[in-house]
Length: 308
View 1: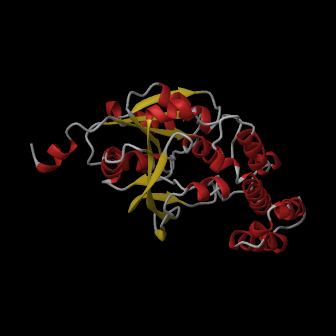
View 2: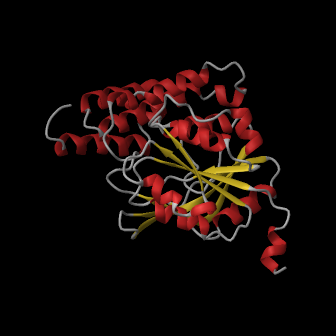
View 3: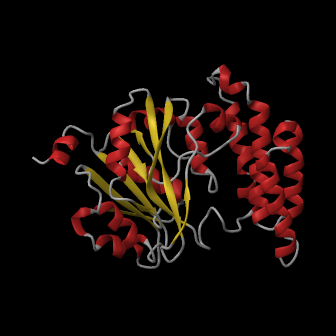
């Protein structure tokens, strides 16, 4: 057994889910990046969420190296829940069907996760690439803090994050009625199960293109998700005091996030109302984040053809 083999011996199985809807353009690259991992015990499940463009056929072409689960279109959250339900790993993760992992990503995240019993989730830094897979920038994620996650609603984990199945089962899966920010909602609940750890290594590639959910215009209901998410979260009776004390700030940052989503979608009047609502916590309204969202809304006024 070589040095790497000895290093990997005894490490847990990792189950990665790839939720995919009409992802034929990129899913081959995504799966290829997973098969190129230097981690031996890796289970890959692609959930074809009712695609009509050959996504499932591309996934099937990889044969027994990839599990393929097909379902009627139900959304990303349902797809990932289905994938994790048929998986067997003690460590779980997911990757969007247009993103990629670097070859050492799984191994490095698992090594750090196993070395820290108090940690339930590890997240790395990542590159941002365009639709042609050209590197555009590098995103260095902030180190984990409960204040950043809960008070500032900073969605700290990005592509490449891995977490413990036992914590996932306690926190619950992604919320199926959230389409814009189900990841943030999930991480708020996961953070109640233990700490996160930022691994300061670039181990993933996030693809930015016109079809990305993060950047495209979305319906009104999705712009309202931050308020719904926060309302549900603070209705819990089991929140620790150090989280509950940030409620006003959290709600203000939910309004900022809502303003950004509505602003990107051209609903400038709604966006300005949500921005004003952030005055619930004045320091939030004067933050750098608020300034960035104000600039985004201003740009939408001049770039959009008319009110929506």
